[in-house]
Length: 191
Image 1 (cartoon, one colour):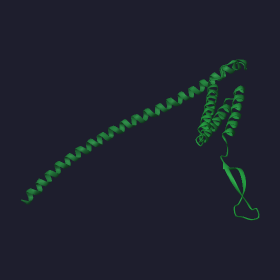
Image 2 (cartoon, one colour; image 1 turned 120 degrees about the horizontal axis):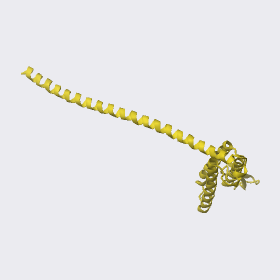
Image 3 (cartoon, helix red, strand yellow; image 1 turned 90 degrees about the vertical axis):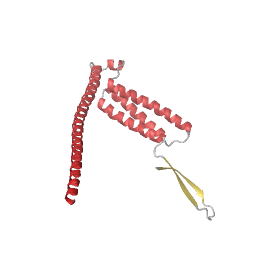
Image 4 (cartoon, helix red, strand yellow; image 1 turned 180 degrees about the horizontal axis):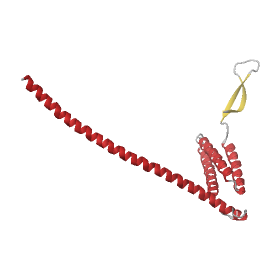
């Protein structure tokens, strides 16, 4: 928290005009400041997309999402319902903008700007999008293989536990029979 303003007021019952100061605190960054930062980042993203810089675009998109998360946290502290609805409306608007920019980053622009760029730039964006999809598919396939291995290991362990349980039941019943025989023999010897 940072001091927002300082007020001076006379202290009751003091002579000589002695005054005390009171500091009022407010959140470090108002929503307007967050929106200003977000607008700057969104402008930078659009510039990077126009240049075709996909790695810089991805970094800036992450930064924009972080700012949007901070805005969401700040919105939770708004008590006035009218202000809260306005903040939620602005939040939704910026969320849509960021989602739109993410789609453009993934799939390419697809409008006349891409056609007006250097030859093959549209194909490059499509290839980059395809590469990202292939990486995602490969990761999914690897995860599926690991899942299948875990399932087969669990099936083997289940069978082992079933056999152990059955062996334990058999041993218990044999011990029970042995206990009965031992009791009968002890009675026979006593008699």
